[in-house]
Length: 287
Image 1 (cartoon, rainbow, N blue to C red):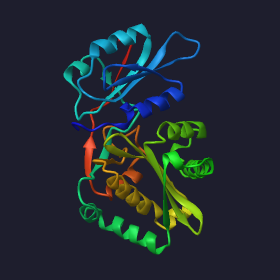
Image 2 (image 1 turned 45 degrees about the vertical axis):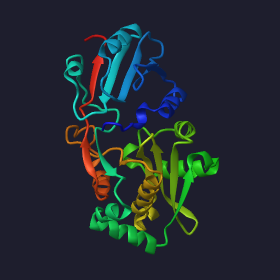
Image 3 (image 1 turned 60 degrees about the vertical axis):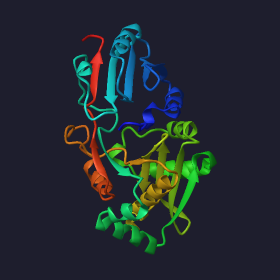
Image 4 (image 1 turned 135 degrees about the vertical axis):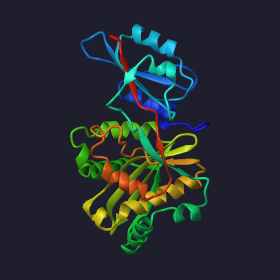
C-alpha cells in the first residue's frame, strides 16, 4: 500500500463531503477528519476514512473532546491496526465503507489482464460484443445534465439491495462536480438505449469502481462485464497503478454485508488479488 492514495483522503473527496454538510479538520498532511453536527444538540459525529499511518492519536483524542464527537469511526488504509490505536478504541461491527476489496495490478499488460480473467468473464465480454452492446466513455468534466440524469435513473432503479438508503440525485451530482477532473463514466448502449453504466473515480494513482448498474436488458445482453473491462483498459491507458473494485463480501461482517455475496462473485471473475483491510474501529466520548 506504500505510495498508493485512497480516494477518501483526496481533496476531491473533501470537496464532496463539504457539499454534503461535513466539516473537514486536517490531522496532518495526508489525513482528514470529517465531522457533522447533530441537529439540536451540542454533539458531533465523526469519521476518519482510509487514513494512512502513522496517525496522530493524541490529536484525535483532543479533537474528539473539543468538538464533543459522540461517535467517531475510524478505518485505516492498512492491513492491520497499530496497537496504540486499538488500545484507544473498540471494534466497529458496522463499517461505513468496504473492509475487503479486489485490486488489479494495472502495470501488467492488457494481454496479461485478459488472461487472468475467469473463463466465464471472458466469454461474457465476447457475448456482449456479439449482442451489439456499444460503449461510450465520457470524462467527468464533459458530461452533461441529461447524461447525468440517465446514469442516475438507471442506477436508482436497479439497486434493490440498497432500496432504503439510495443516495439522492443531489448527492450524486455533488460527487460528480467534486470529481469532475478525476472521474469518467462508461455507458453500455444497445439500439440507442442505455442499458448499463459505470462511474470510475480516481486518485493520483488508483482507479475506483464507484457506482454501476445494469438494466434488465443489460443483464440479458451481458453488458456489465463488457463495460467494466473497458473501464479497466481505460484506467490502464491513463497510467493508474491499481484498479480497485471498491468492495467485496467480508466474512468478518456477515450481517452488515449479507447482500454482498452476489456482486462479489461477479467481481472475482476479473482476477486480481483480494485485499482484507484492517478492521474498522470506533470510539465515543463516554469511553
